[in-house]
Length: 312
Ligand code: GLU
Image (cartoon, rainbow, N blue to C red; front, side, top):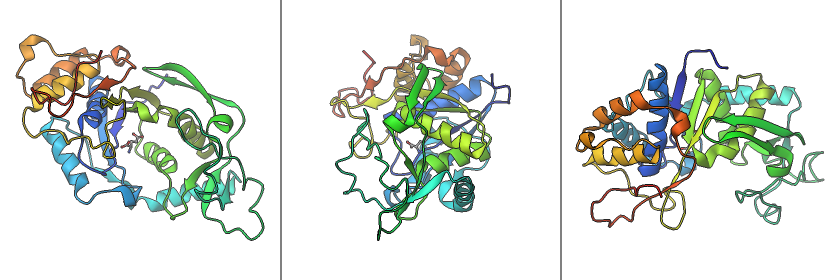
């Protein structure tokens, strides 16, 4: 049991404005922290600089304010944290836990893939670079054992990193630190006790737990909330052209996000403002009531202009 005072976080990537799917993750993480009387931090995950959009971080913070999602303390920004990530990589090197890799994306194109469509690294450079090859990235060696973990919504799960992921990248060929390393270092440095985020990251958790073990960092409690998909079953994202959260009718949009989380507001709250809806949900919140299944977004031209359909 985790007896430390609750510290949660929302960690958006500033690749574009928040949409109906990212709102669900933000609201769940805010409610879980506030219902526990905890702190709630915001971290801008601009680690993957080529994917970030200028101005998106400010837009996201303005959207959060407009939806009543008040955070605590300073907003951390990953692009200012390279020294911390470099120190963690050095610690991994000192343990012999990582090795340089020369493989290019095209060389790995034929490698097997896991159930999420990610390449399972075949271990080409694990025992040394092939003759004449130049190191491009750094990978962490994973063990051939099951990592067991508990998700507060999905229950007890396990993954064998060697079979499902392979040795994974902690520093990329373009010189940027990988998300897996940055998130683990930041969650520890910010004292995060509870991670509540979208279910697309569920199967990243064992990689992060393994890095925590190697670096001697605590493992927070994890909960992965339902994704919102479009009618084709794709996660709402910039790539799938998800519309930004609307500037008007925010109460109705927030009510839909709460419905996805298993908390449809009562009729009396129809027309309520975001702050009122959040205050109501906070009193009733219990994360085990959140359904594990995804919700489907309504087409943009839906007559009432709400971004979410009630979950089936
Ligand atoms: N930055 C990630 C995203 O926007 C979230 C990472 C996390 O919550 O661990 O998808």
